[in-house]
Length: 335
Image (tube, rainbow, N blue to C red):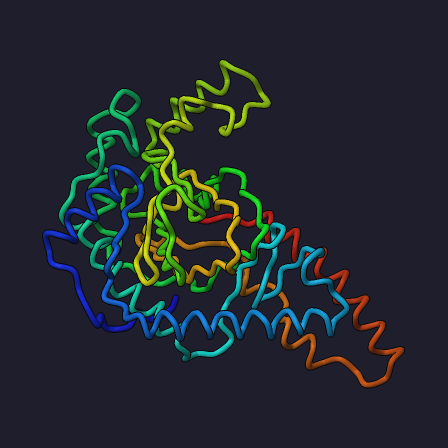
């Protein structure tokens, strides 16, 4: 876990409560003004772009096509065309300072969610399937778990012009869903801080409100089973009518539950879209994304030999290593 920096600006308690209520009921909330300065946003955008460009150069040194290939390194991975996940290689930069400020603003909202609000009646162990005694015992046990959020990971998502829409997905895997059902404190939250302005209905993140709730997921699963096995959310006019693509200015925050169905929107603009982010964890949850277990891109480049034959062999080994690393990334999920 990463240490959370001291807050430079804090929301008022009533605002924290409002955002916490939205996070509980809708699964997401937007904080347009998180107290992050325009200068820091500008510097962080430059830091992300510089790091991203340098890592792409590193890929080419290894003989890996940075645009066409799929790969999963500790510092950088690419899972979709023109869309990358980047992680900082420096302990301190404008990028990490911005994420620290974002976490400092988001953490009180998460703490308020756990400390001041009862769990949603539509989430967790639903009363029609669980006895009152079981709910009481598990609820009491959950309150013993830590409610103070810890930073599980930080990074940035970079989408170049031409990036297509993602498939709808939840970042939570089956293990996390099962544990979150038992404990309202076992939670993971994405904290997105866009480094460019995102307009409502534009090229930000599409969210399905309340899809993190157990009742909503149950209703959706039953509905899918009654329709067709090849069912896709994109084909459900009813669900698509509920979707939201909230506006968020550069330096604002979008916080959403790991269980929420969402997708990155296509980048049809002429600018590179960079979103700095952190994952906040409570109640012992953690994200098993596997980035730390992936091989280091920088180390692989540093290890390259000056001898052409040896260098060629090293590149072949890295290419095979990336096949396994990519499989690990796809297999892992949040717990």
